[in-house]
Length: 198
Image (cartoon, rainbow, N blue to C red; front, side, top):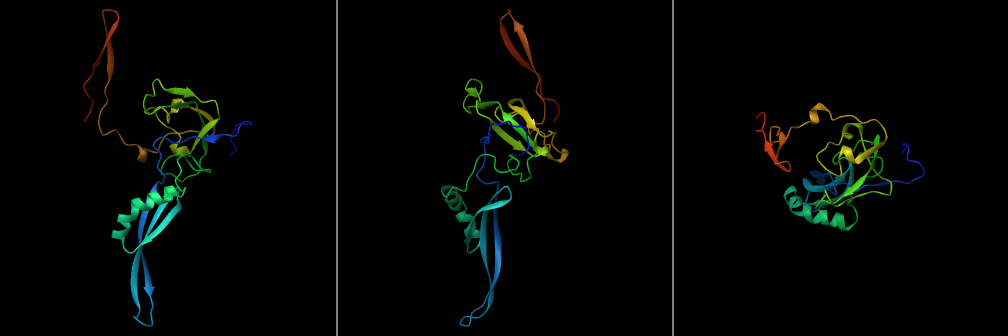
């Protein structure tokens, strides 16, 4: 990593809502069986692959796709029990779930937040904790607490916004504006505008 991190060895931050694997693939595998006793014929089996960052982390076989579907959760737990699940950034890959591009942007994580009460249960990080992203995923937004632009300090690379094809408006379909009305000097009562659009 070529970013300016000084003498501190950074640790990669756990990712909120991280998944052990970002892809599960079931594939039919044909094979030509030969036998001097029963004869020759094409047969099939199914291969189950648990993939993270484009790399196969765990693999197993079943006789058919239907049987493989039934085995998927058991194989998932087996892979986790074998230590193949991982919930923080790794190697030089982008920390965005589902992306296997190389990371080019490095951020220092400023605070750790509790999922239960992030407004009150949070703390400044004393250790150098980082997250790394490719340029495409480097703009993190303002919806979350932990994984948000406001919780990062840029250490290296050049951040940019998402590609236009990746932008998806909220299913709510509009914007809600909230205005505070002050009554009696102290009481604040929010008033909402109706949603715009849709």
